[in-house]
Structures are given as structure tokens and as C-alpha cells.
Amino acid sequence: MWYANDSASHLIKFIMSKHKHALTKLHARRNPDRLLKEAYAQLQEDACVVYLVGAMEPVAASFTKHAYDEGDRVANHIAAGLALQNIAAQFEYQGSVTKNTHIKAYSDIDLLVLDKRFVIHEKPEYQTQSVKEEPVQNLIQVRQVCVGCLGTAFPKANVDASGPKSVRIQGGSLARSVDLVPAHWVDTDDYLKKKSKVYRGVQILDAHVPRCEFDQPFIHSHLLDVHDERTRGNTRKLIRLLKSIKYDSESRLGMSSYNIESIIYRMPESEMQQKRGEEIPLAYRCLLWLKKLEDNHLFRDALQVPDGKRLIFTEGKATPMQLTELREKLEHLLQDIDKHLKQTFRRLEAALIKWPSPAEPSCHSSGYDKGDQHPKHETH
Image 1: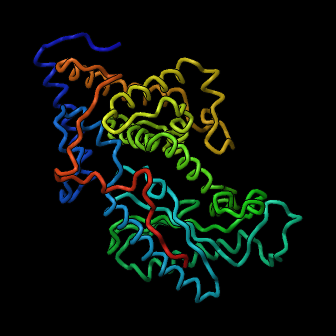
Image 2 (image 1 turned 90 degrees about the horizontal axis):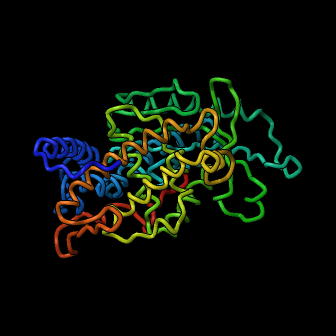
């Protein structure tokens, strides 16, 4: 239920204080050096509205580029170290930075380290290359070289090889954390037919077992791209908003970023056609979508992740409790926005926001949003 129309000053002050704190956290993670003048921060709106709009915006391009630059630094050292062992490698970026759904200026970046000594085919009958050694042993060797190279190239950085799939390096001269993931290519049937990297798979090393696990990370990113294009860039806006709400929550919300992306991907495109300035109605439609998933368990439990490989709500993945927690946080934010809007006789489902004109100084074009190209990186 929405709050009653209560003009009590103490309640208004409490709401303002709460969202000013959230807005301060948003500014701190998006613009930590305070060197940018972002357009959303200039909106003549209450803090709760500025927070909602800012949480939807892409991170500034300068920060995103720096993440790739640091990833390239690490990749160059790894490539040289592998070459000394006569191992040819290819590098592919993955994660929220490549999908432009990251919400922090200092976001880490994921880097697949692909052993080019062999390629596995999805169907054994198509396997023309002789794999002389077990792929697991080859990738263990790649992982060991990665750990050794990182320690030598970045002696003041912290190298963490405790994870089963990735080796993380952070600190020292690096301004971003980089997660290295040893893997090798898998040519799927769809890839062989369509010759597009979107359909190519990878086998990722789980060093704790040890074994290789199949994944198709590129198709997920491609499907998000398509959905975002069809929804005026609103798919990524809502993903960033829900990730921000999760990140800024005082209580720990357990839903993974992948499941948040999947839930927004399954939101009907017809409900996501709002234009710039209609961020509040967009968030309101998102709230109605989350409520629908809560109320209709048969519908919710049948929803699949974008590539259709599994259900969103299934054992060990997203849970109804996580959905409720996320919905409650978004609803509380919109309740406070509703109180603010009523002071100017506006409604959630139709409220418009006036963005600064192009003549005014802003940083609206600072992020990679719909229609922009991700930075290009050489394959090592």
C-alpha cells in the first residue's frame, strides 16, 4: 500500500535524509574522484528521484575504458608468460563491464584466458584435431603460469588463487581488479553453422575438482543487447537500477546479477518503451512486473534465463524470498517518490523528468549506452 497523504514534517525529513544518504553512496561509487559533472546530478528533483534516475545511468566511459586498459596490461603479461611455455592464448572479456550493466566506477573485469592449443567440438564426430593431453591438465598448466606471471609482473599486487575458476589480481599498480579464467574453446553445432562467436562455447576449469565445465557466455550478452535495442535502452537501465538497490541495501539481498538480468530480460518489451524523461513510469512498470512474478507462482516458476538453458527460479538459483526482498526495496523507493510527486500534482505512472538541455554542462554521454560501441581490444 502507498503511504497516506501525510504532511508531517518529521516524516518528510526522515525520507529526505534516507535518500540523501543513498544518493551520497551512489555518487561515491559512480564518481569517486568527483571530477565528473553528471547530468542526472543536476536534476531539479528530490533526492529519491535523483537516486532512481542516477542508478539507471551507465557508468562514465572514462572509468569503463580504464577497466579495459588494466585488463589489457594483465593480458599482455600473461600472453608473454604463456608464450615462454609455447602456449598460444586468446583473451576475451566477460562480465558486467562488457554488458554495460556495471554500477561502479572501479568495477572489476573478467578475462577469459583461452588455450589455443586445442578446440573441442560439441559433437565428437566433428572432432578433427587430435588432443594429445587431457584438457583439464592443459588448463591447470595455464592457471599455474597465470599465477606465476602475475606475481612477477605485479609484485606489489595481491594475487588470489583460492577460487575454483578464477585467479584474481588487485592492488599494487593496478587500479582495477582483474579476474583471470582459464578456458578453451568449444565449437558448438550452432557456431559451425552460423560462424558467429555469439554461439561459440567455452570449457572453464574448475581447479578444485578438477574438471572442465561448459558455458556459453557470449549468447547471454548478445540476447541482452537485442532486448535492450528493442526497449530503447531500458533493459540495461532497469538492470542497473535493481543492482543498485541490491548494492545499496542495508540488508544483504541475495539475488545474483545474472538472475536480475534474466528477470528483466523476461519483462515484456511492450512495457519497456518509455522515452528519456520517463524513468519514473519505467520503474513503476518494473515494480508491477516484480509483483506479477510474486503473485503468480506458476508463471514465475516457468520463466527461463535468456538462453533457455535453465529456469530462473529453481533450486540453488533465484528464490521467491529474494524476489520479495528486491520488490520491497523498489516499492519503498517508489512510495517515497510518490510522496514527493504529490506535492507537484504528478503521478508515478505518468511523471516526467526534465533533463538538462544539451547546452548545459553535463556528462550524459559519458557511458556506453544503447547504440554505442564497446571499446575494441586486440586479441593476444
